[in-house]
Image 1 (cartoon, rainbow, N blue to C red):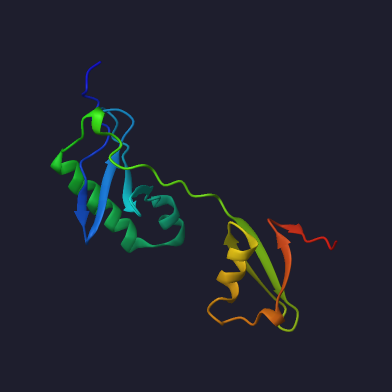
Image 2 (tube, rainbow, N blue to C red):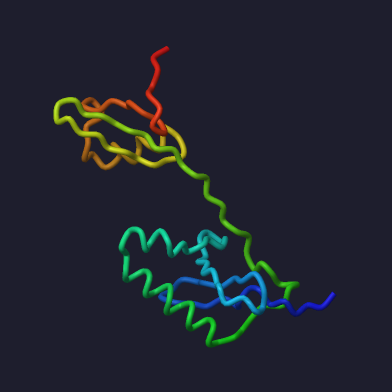
Length: 143
């Protein structure tokens, strides 16, 4: 079997961070940019940045992608992937309600402890004024 698919680029350093491109085939011009995160490759999802209107990050993704393509330095199959992939669990949406000010705040987290830390950890919100009312748009039932 030939060792010539070359579907992952060599690592590319940009602003102190390591990046690489991946593609499905050598002919494929649809590249996916990954950034090293704790020794693993995490996908840089341009769609999320686009939806958030983060133009600076989109420009950075485009610049890094173009630079890596221009270098044309791809790893042999035997060296792929150079790091394991980071897989992130999809979170749940926790909805907190404040009756005094009639406001709902939604927090995305993998568990209630994490949602509570996100919601109340920085002291912006007082936990005594907020009640968890929904998880993934489903009402909380009392036991």
